[in-house]
Image (cartoon, rainbow, N blue to C red):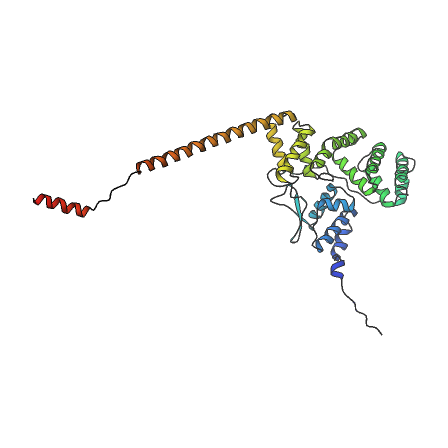
Amino acid sequence: MDKITLKNTLHHTTTILPNEFIDHYMIKADGEYVKIYLLILRLMNQNLPVEIEQLADTLELTQKDILRALKYWEKEGLLAMEDTENSSAPDMVQTDRTISTASASQTAGDSDSYPTLPQVPEKKSRNMSEMEKSIKGTDLEQTLYMAETYLGRPLSASELNSFCYITDSLHFSSELLEYLIEYCVGRGKKSVRYMESVAINWFQQGIDTIKKAKAESSQYSQNVFPVMKAFGINRNPGPAELDYIKKWNSLGFETDIIIEACNRTLLATHQASFPYANRILNDWKKSGVRSVADIRSLDQRFHAAAQADSSQDKSSGRQNRQNQNFNKNTTNAFHNFEQRSYDYDDLESRLLEKNRR
């Protein structure tokens, strides 16, 4: 009989989950929060880097959803949030390991705190029969039929519960819910989880009509995406990055001026540094810049002043060299003869001899 060799590879392929988490924490936590915690635990056990953007993309959630989950687990005592010295965003720490949640481009100097967001209503699970009974004969029933048409399949109980949560707890009208579905599908996002996340973000921003939702979408298209593109970033902005962009627009700058600041930031720092661009725009604001032409004029004055300083330095340098040459020539002229050497003992002897005579 051939010998069979077994190899234990659990430490490479398995994430250990304490029973205490299952018994006490998992039961009462939101399902999305549990998924986020498990994914963090899996990455940390493998000593892999963990970023909010990565978590959001993997789970098809928004970055604000990830932050809400992390704050929940902090409240439960499973994660600790700390502000790092060189970051405008909090780092999440479990035991002695750090989970990075901010890129190196958001450095110290201009750190912005996250805005205080409205409390999100708690999501409660309901059984299928209860939901079907509450939906039947309402506008929501037609909206859900539209959602199934977009998705190409019937809704699961969990997805149905999400839509009920959006209408009942977040107070979305059927029209706004329809626009939400079209908005997400139009961006290639057919996950109901993602739709719920966007709905929560709109709720926190006070977006309760289609007009406000379209205005927010238009603002993103006109102000946010061009900046991210100028920085070479192919993703949605994080909360701190979005705060910077909103601040720049509040200063009255047009998009072309902001993009010019981004371009100069990349040339100067070779990275997408929002704080550096912020300093450029603040300086332009103090200088009264209102157009790209003003920037060109400011550049010309700067270069003219720099050339004047350079010319003055060169003139001072020439004068110093002339003085040095004069001193050198004067010294040489003074010493340009054959100097005599005297024997003072011999002179003294001659004088004494002369006096004796």
